[in-house]
Amino acid sequence: MKHFDIDTFKVTNPIKLKEVSTTFDLGESKKEIKNELEEIREKLGKLQDTMYAHGKYGVLVCLQGMDTAGKDSLIREVFKDFNTRGIVVHSFKVPTELELKHDYLWRHYIALPSRGKFSIFNRTHYENVLVTRVHPEYIMSENLPHIESVEDITDEFWEKRFEQINNFEKHIAENGTIIFKFYLNLSKREQRDRLLRRLELKEKNWKFSPGDLKERRLWEKYQECYEDALNRTSKSHAPWFTIPADDKSTARYIVAKIIYDTLKQYDDIQEPELDDDIKANLELYKKQLESE
Image (tube, rainbow, N blue to C red; front, side, top):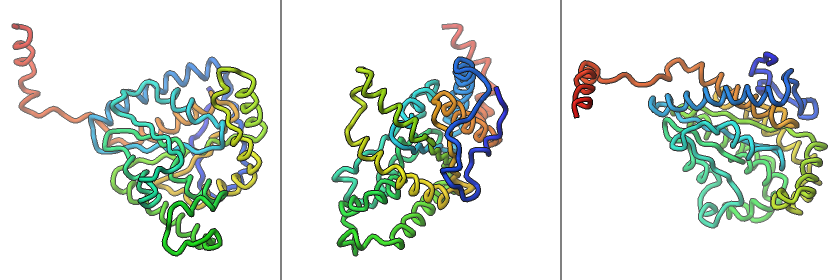
């Protein structure tokens, strides 16, 4: 496997998405990459068991990307070896009537991981500065004070929303949530090919929606909004990683490696020690069970 530093993909300075590659050569075949992924996800599963017992940190994994970027399959393949009690996946779609009665971050806040667990956000709170920025009319359903029409949604409105998101992430990071934010960087050509496969393969037809083509026509606007969001909100406590997503196997491995390598840097994550009294009597408890 080709060695790479995970910081290669971290957004630490302003980027231009047009200059960020959607491919990355790991120097191995798909089968070899799959085998490497199996090894690292097994390690992740064991680490998650330790974190569950440790009970001090929660982990939030945020996945964003254009339609067909591979978020669903990445979740399935990267977290396959996790104990189900330690992970919850949240797929955020159009806000419900109840969710719209609260501020836009409420539904994300209540889905945060408890200590010792992982929460995966399949689409995230960033939809509120991505989809709504491309379609500002969606903001009207939030029924916000002082927003009477789309014309009231100014640059200042988006500035404030970015500030709120940064404050939200800083708050949860300071209170024990380890945050990973992955942008699956897909090329427009590869999205076209994946949409065509959805139309050509009967078993994938159900994934296709005519709305996918409507949104595809807004590709450049989405890229502009993603670039702005990445540059405004990649912080040391909540960094963004741009993941080359044209090859799904490569993207999955890179995401798994970033999570594992980062979590291994927390040298305080250890299984709790047994109480001294219990430890001193282990042989006694063993004999009690064996004598039954």
